[in-house]
Length: 158
Image (tube, rainbow, N blue to C red; front, side, top):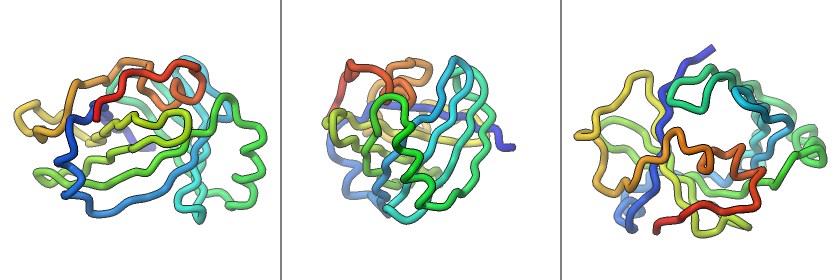
């Protein structure tokens, strides 16, 4: 079991794009989601499927378990998705030795760009990159489970 400090930010401007070190196309969906827990399947680049169980509040620290599952089974389970299937491209950007994952959403969520920072420790604001916008950590509208279930698309900054 891994504990993570997860922070989410809207992204300002396009400066981060020149810093991209890699990208992954992602389709993800939820099989179960309740307050304090979720069961998610993610298919990366159409090749690898990962089942993720998350427990805890929607704050910064949660318990997370991940398991690889056969791709064919994950695609079959998509029929049991609750809410929408999320489509996004995840861009990897390093800043001060930390990896930022910047999700550029497609489909019904097109225009939404969210940066995530997962670390074992809390990072002070003075060490965050300038291209990060408003922090949305703890705002349930910006969690993937909420994005999958809600008909409303939250504010997007680009």
